[in-house]
Length: 314
Image (cartoon, rainbow, N blue to C red):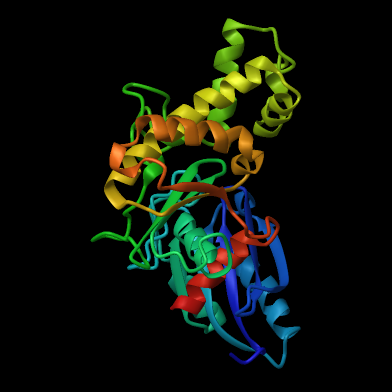
């Protein structure tokens, strides 16, 4: 591959959007970001991203840009549209690929942000060379990408693999999707904060006593310091995730489960109890066959790498 061939990766989150230029070896040669939440109109958002991207591309004057890959909530690979994303300002069906393609005049491919992360992990990270694995992204919500026999699973409509929106608690917490009890309301950065606040109503004997300033990081820091309540919160979170993964394994039989995102950076605080509960709940024919690991992608560039992988694959 010519070293001057680059792909554009754009990762759209509810709060921030990051983007950059990536070579085939997974080196992010340049990057930038904007605040997604600042833009009420998607057209203004696309204008702002393209303005900055054009400057990044101009700085690589001798490079060929092979394509643009976009990872976004509710991104549909088949249509190129964002469809009814609950955590974005833009409602309904948004023809995002077309909007970017019209401005940049570069072939543009869109998928769910977790699917993009799975592609990135397979090309550059912990799942390199693995044909059967599940990627679970633990950020504000919970996303997932399923790779089976080397291919991402999209289903008939482009929306397969929504582990975060499987119901784990009947009549449980209200989810952004409008239903109650979805996994992401328990296993995510926002979910673990909700759990902490519920636990603290029963016991205030914790360093987390100031409800106003609880974050997933403060819970993690407290658990690392040995705070008993924080450790109970992680155990509660891990049981929800372990049970869900045990059910997932019965469907796709992955070799590997990769955890990615802010909450996954807590490492063994989450992975060890999750593995324990997975082995407790999983069907016996799968016991001790599946490894759970943290992403090996560079945290600062991971989202861009995942999105760019879509352009390389396309």
